[in-house]
Length: 76
Image (cartoon, rainbow, N blue to C red):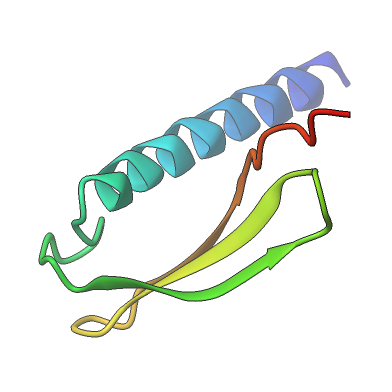
């Protein structure tokens, strides 16, 4: 049971690290898969003051990924 728990935690940490690397590449304007400057925002959703769900798509290779990005506070 402990082996499964440790494996799950390590797998999730690896997933988050990879997701962060992808978002860093996108912030620089590059597609994480094909490394071209062809990444675009295709969808952006927000529920007010909370985090935004932003979907990026590469027009060259078809890479699609969504990220939850902190939208800041409302100042209330």
